[in-house]
Image 1 (cartoon, rainbow, N blue to C red):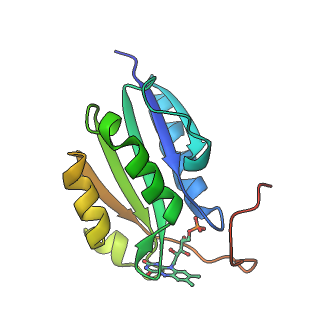
Image 2 (image 1 turned 60 degrees about the vertical axis):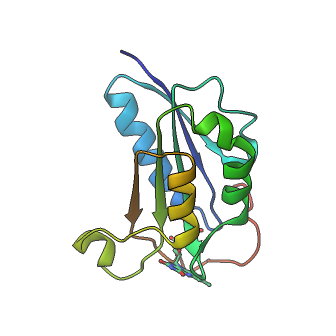
Length: 136
Ligand SMILES: Cc1cc2nc3c(=O)[nH]c(=O)nc-3n(C[C@H](O)[C@H](O)[C@H](O)COP(=O)(O)O)c2cc1C
């Protein structure tokens, strides 16, 4: 069955967008219909069969806009399969084993009854900047 999947992501320096792009590509290769959007650009999740939501960690937290999205869409999210991911660790911990979600994300996972959480390694670019992401 073809599934319409939303890959929603927050980012500051765009490396999490690359992770979302890779997930989207894998889903497309498997015959699903993925759509990749910044969390702030998602109007609603009603049109999707499943949702993947990810955010980088900064100072031990997900980005605010990812939490805002979770709060706003929590009722609809709890009615469909959801997978969460974090990006962050700059060492090899994420490839060595499971890195559990930070507490607020763990609580969100339980609240919306998400299927799973995965942590991917992050990266720091030379041009890393503070503040909100700027569209390229
Ligand atoms: C100021 C700062 C704080 C960070 N804090 C964390 C953290 O608490 N935990 C973590 O795993 N990674 C942390 N990182 C690493 C970022 O999560 C990583 O660089 C990630 O790939 C950034 O994603 P983005 O490019 O989508 O913004 C931090 C990076 C910076 C620059």
